[in-house]
Image (cartoon, rainbow, N blue to C red):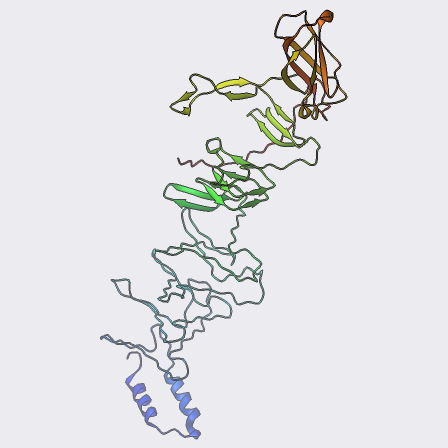
Length: 465
């Protein structure tokens, strides 16, 4: 024991052996206080233990085991003093602690403050300022809670501050590659956010108010960046996005999407190297359903344009399709199309085009004694315009003086031989009629629709085979 003179020590021992009565309590206490007061730059009281035991130990059956106070008016964090100071001055090893607190049932270390930090941790090396461990399956290594009844004053349960200043709400990282929060798990989840059923806010809130395009969320995998969210709502996925339903009020951009349903008011952009849509195995529902326009107004429901914004395919809510080009079908052939029982080729066939919408039928009949009555197929007469005459072309299939058509009705027509001939001969006929309920103009001049398309900004492309 240093910094206490032998005289003062003797007095302390003498006072300790006295049987103090109530009449001398105050004088004795005043004398002891005067003896325990010093004005030194070194500690007033210091014990050095050269063995493995504790230098100072305080035990209390009801109060605090050890209490330290400071009345120093600090002017900054670097100039502050501590009520209790614990220092590890060892020159080797990293297992010692400046302050160690253990508890059999309560809290190992408790810090309270009516103004500043309850507990503060600082390290000058690459280690942690505050480090916590828990050996319980339901425990937490580090836990923080804001118990204020009021919110909105920039409070937080846990604050991660890597910068020189903080607004008390956000977690900052200072430097080009500094992490504000780093979480690691050997087998479970590295980060879990959970809130009660009565909570009204988001479980995870990420904000970027820098005003410049930045990534707000980024997920890295073995190939690199696999998912990120930009501060303007852009979402980039390098692989396949699988979900039961996706609802969005902004644009959705993805290189490959497999979903049960997509509902959005913005744009859906699919890259040209990820343009396949697969239906579920055994699912008999339509592979692709499109709903748009209003009710029989001619509004576009489906539009395909090229890079110059020229319409190549349009479909409106009346069912009218406009194709800027030829309509091909893959026809079969008797030679060269089937190899080894499998179709490997087809012959391209063109669809006929007409000046106005018509429907056709054809067949064969026989002229008997110069005349034949040909009935219309009831299915055919049901779909043609009864107010517009249909055309019939006949071709004799044998020698005769020629044929002509007369008596065209919705039930059929009559074919006769020219000059009152009495031949009996077969003939072929072709009927061209206007469609029922269609009043489209002949060769109408059409105006190309103006479609405003805003392609989303994609930052990168990660396509995996």
